Length: 217
Image (cartoon, rainbow, N blue to C red; front, side):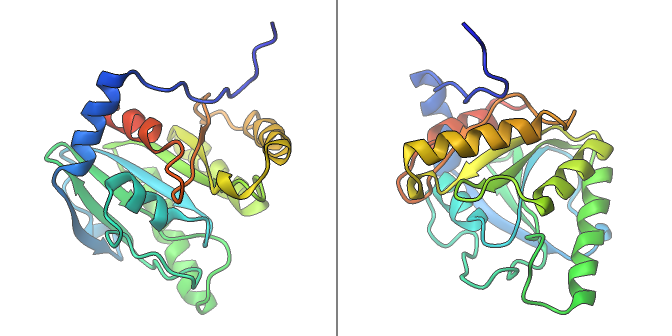
């Protein structure tokens, strides 16, 4: 049997699911929004970050993971998240919501400032365990996604592709998108060799992603 590159992440066992659920429904708080590197909190705990082009559903995914509808600000206006937003996950981890990249309803100078901050963060954060790069399942990997993946390669930051909005496409379309995603990821040495399919609306993949984050030390 041929093994596909970048297989779908396996469903975690019940004990792992429950431990991860308890972590995410426990003490999760917004800590601060950071606009410059000197505003970052101490790197005294493991952290994971979420990166994705504007309107990929990043805020909705963070809200689904934590079971809190308003924790991350979901907006129909792409590019609303203009800061690196830090959330505490219990006393052991940070969840980090990075500014959306690509199209943003903002002046060019502001977008460039976000991009500089993003690059500085990714290349200089020792406590960062993994980046989750969100890919809209309706579109697959676009050029702007490849830019962030290349930056993660250069920064030697392991990243894992998470497909969002999988409930919006049919199974046949999903297979085509997965083939495209696998082909693109094969070119990136920092890509973690498992994919996660999610739907914030339907809850698909949420338990799996929680378990992955909970088991990263």
